[in-house]
Image 1 (spheres, rainbow, N blue to C red):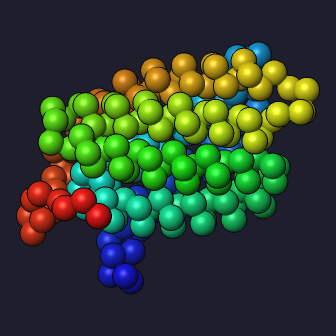
Image 2: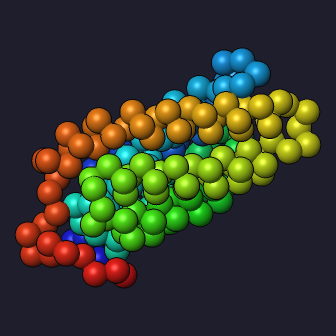
Length: 182
């Protein structure tokens, strides 16, 4: 387990940065439709999908769990506690969904697994996060959720570019060319 986490330090760090930054930035609205967090959180799906492609589902789940633990702890310190808890719940559900859906689609054309898994997981993430974080606050959370989801869909498409470029560098490990579902 220690060896597995040692080789995953970079994805764990990237996941933590994406989530903590998003939890801080979601507190700053751009307008009635968007917060700044909408632009940073999709990087978490890129990290999950690249880890899944390179190391498989078990390692992708480790990155999700480690990122979850570190990001929630840091977010409790750096962001509103309600934001941190909403983020943690939405993050865990959506990222684990992303890992599972990606794995089931991994043998399809290169762009389908990351696009479909990120799109489905983003929808669940958006509903869970904005409901838990903002319901009853008097803030325009429904319009923020709609705007956030729209940006996540645009970012899911845009993230295909770095995904494809990095996929060439981060080929699956040769010892495990076809990953079993775990």
